[in-house]
Length: 356
Ligand SMILES: *Cc1c(COP(=O)(O)O)cnc(C)c1O
Image (cartoon, rainbow, N blue to C red):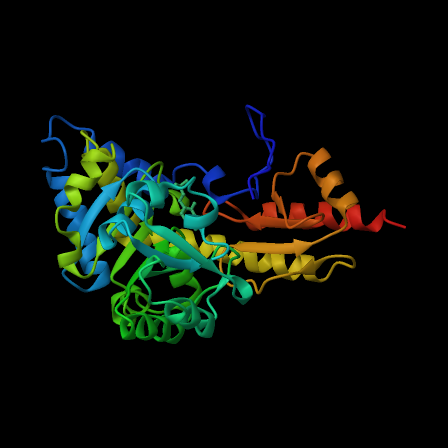
């Protein structure tokens, strides 16, 4: 999906290309500032990191093991590597970030574990297809399925309901697979579902969650959360070897306090989701535009005439294009305002009106 040409130094309009175009939210900035006083022990042996881990345990209402890494690719890759041996395989969706957007990092960090990607409607698994992939072969020539990896919210902005995750986990368990969740937009899924974080993670059978921070309002950082603590065995060594152990860890961990204290994570996710909901309503009402996936989190996927896409780009709007011609993704963030959405909708409406 990475075909945005964005050379502009200063982007003046608020943008819809990705939620990582947004800045750092004020609460996170504040938390970094607060951590910037005096000296603190390095490599995570500090009070900020201890408090951030504790905060995440509170959020999930369980005694989980938490590690902070720099980005989502590292979080996913190292988490998957810790669940697998090199001859294992990971079942993921065709559109999964681990498959399409991590440059082979999961395979690299697991020394050869293979990703088996399968289709399913709306970015979600079709469980019959998952079961077929698990049971298709059991001979020594086939990389042994070991992990089922779900993305929540999915890459196309849909959200798995708690029962769907539980059903996927049950299936995985039945065949001895572990369950990994790529939660780069976990907060958006919670804002959409209105359930407790535990309900779509460990209570629904997830063993390891990669919890997104950057797209939720942080500058840098994701948390790897092990609900099954045995799976975290020696994980800190993996992080260090992969270049993912921050020496000034407090500046990676303290921002989580900014995000989690006072519910900023949820406020940010709601803002992004609400803007996407408004955008979906606005765009759905325009002749010539169709919404192609149910809008459940903070993105809106549409099909529109290529001339409209070109006109929007020429006018300075940024968004991702994909799936041939005219397919577009508009992504909202904590920083998107209703006014931004209405401006974009107006631009789309005007551009559509000029088509004969
Ligand atoms: C953004 C994103 C990630 C994290 O990507 P990094 O650029 O490595 O931080 C992981 N999974 C999904 C689904 C994402 O959208």
